[in-house]
Image 1 (spheres, rainbow, N blue to C red):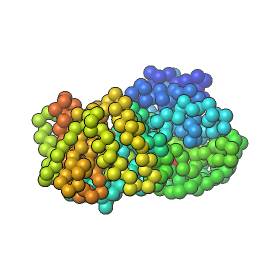
Image 2 (tube, rainbow, N blue to C red):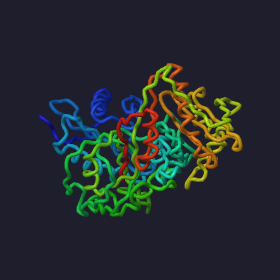
Image 3 (cartoon, rainbow, N blue to C red):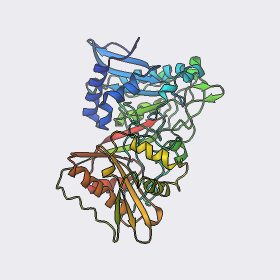
Image 4 (cartoon, one colour):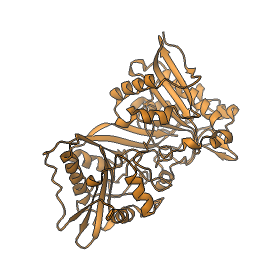
Length: 445
């Protein structure tokens, strides 16, 4: 027998939670990091987190968590694939939204500083730098590289390795959280002013992803929880400024002084039903990414195809500042670029235990000098950048192929990256290189 939504007195059992995450990811795809115990602890078991559960004959079949952060409450959720379609997702989301209003008080946020980790404040919680069809980065992506149809490559970053207001997240900071395993596509439906629970929606299971959002959503029903009615501001993908800031741009329940703080729902296994559920609660998509993977093996024949005259340099203590200079030149034109110092950016890379300097390379071109770079970590293409003057030369594609070749030669069997959903040209390029779609991530607000 399935019980209703129950608030957890202490914390969700980690072993049961991990099993639930694995079942959801097996059905919905997404990044491999979501099944890492350290990832779950940071998103589900941190101090100050309010959790809810649903059990069937004693077994955990669904869960939701609301964790406080200086930027506003963050909601994550999971529903076992075998128990979807019963309204469990809707009930969990309503419970989480109500709890978010209670958490988003000045007192709660003041004591939740330890939750404001790099992962929480990441660039929209989304790893990766995106490219527009024209070859430049989309406004919703972290500042970065662009590529031409001729073979450039977008800067796809591994989770947690993207630009934040503080100058970028370390690769150790996982972007996003195991969250609502839901649908796709932004929504702008307003929830009834009388309360979120009053808006019935098709059942959706939420496992989750990352991303910011905006839409008008009166939430008078949350006023009793210390939340003022307000409107979400914006619409569709956020601007680069919003992404770089890493925190809410506008939003939902929560007031600190006179400031209204948003509630963000994170999704790491984004499915089609979630959009309907989130829309019915006045939430809108503010970020979305495709998660992609390529299988590699030594001898696969990843020929870089360098532009004529290219000179390749590997990351080292002596060359790291040159990498930073190319990074800054590649991304600085983007609105909201945080412009970290060389020391900050270099440390963000090198302090990550998974960073691989031997797979991270830079190339100089005749007439351009240092023109592009790629940084890589264990299992991930982290960032790729090409300076504006060298775009359209195929350098981006060459950089990633060479990095993949080096990974394979070192015994790696796969590499992951993410690409913004509003960047179909970049996704096509990745697929051309051999990357397969492995799910979607999203964030709603």
